[in-house]
Length: 503
Image 1 (cartoon, rainbow, N blue to C red):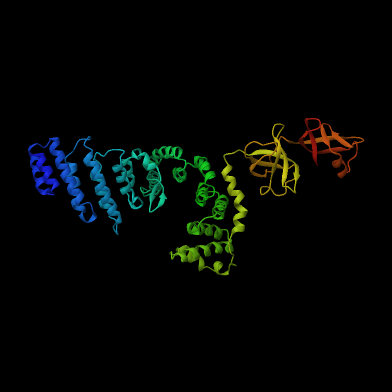
Image 2: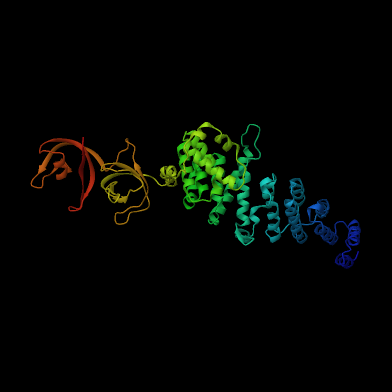
């Protein structure tokens, strides 16, 4: 056999003659690497000619012939070139009106033993092709495991461009797709329980997801899916701490609060607050139809019919605008008596506002609350002075956090960092439960001793201001019992106690 002669036949398109000569050589010397190479390239030529769905059978047949040659691992060139043709065929299959996933499975089975260059542009193209229809392909996870995400090139982690628009990188798409397929729980057994191997698959994937989250913090969705996967594992104790850093960054995205509600499956009030927060954000209405419908269900459950009707009407409006089908649940609600009789509302913004604080407090659950006491209140400026102990004291704006605080109130506060010149920013503040105590508040009991002419007084070491004596018409030698607060005397530059309340 003349390799030059076969090459000339290939160049002139006489593939049948060339292949006949190559087959004769293979019969004579089946283990000769040169015979295998020339045959492989001829099969590739046929592969290239049949890389469209209407020639699928011929395409597969030539793939099988390449496979049958059992080329060694270092013979990568023919496989890399074949990857482009395989990808083209798979993309073509996805464009068919009815995608035949059986054919996609057949191709995957053939190429499992191909020796592609990894990573490479051709190998990434192969992934993109099979990824195209992952939503409806039951074999996607097996394919992704075989392809191995470690084989993405550095370019695959960069944003891509399609029709002039920036789209997320194929690597980020891959991790999202894998997460989604894991969450579908395709392999549920007859008892409806997740199998052990499903959980193991999630467990093994989470470290990979962690690595992506750490290395590419600009990727928006991997932290979201990590939280979803932790929920699927039933790891409620870890999911919130995992999700909180991401939620703080994305707090203005409605879907963050939708997922936050899932983290608290047993707490209906927190779920309700999270939905209120989600719906309070500026979001295109098209994205909110499912969320509004779910929230309407919560409102119906609470018999808040006017509010439920407002949400349902918005859902109907958007669906009719886009000529989307109305869900059966919506139709059923509109036919019920409560819907027909409920007064109409323009919207539920006032309701959302009532629950924003409760939802936002969740973001700071990883920051411990501190117990403080109110020492002074300036209602005009919504400023209060507080004292925790002799080491921490100052003032902060309580607007939107506490309703009408009073001197002596004990509060639970989350501070936003350290104070500056005594002024603190706060993340959350609320009145403490009645059974909580503060080290800045104590009871006292004893005899009042008034000191003229200033007319201030003491009960042992507790200072009593002249105005307090006057307002309460107290007299020297009178027995008193009450509460005192820790207070700093600027004139004396020392700490002491002063009375704030009589019993």
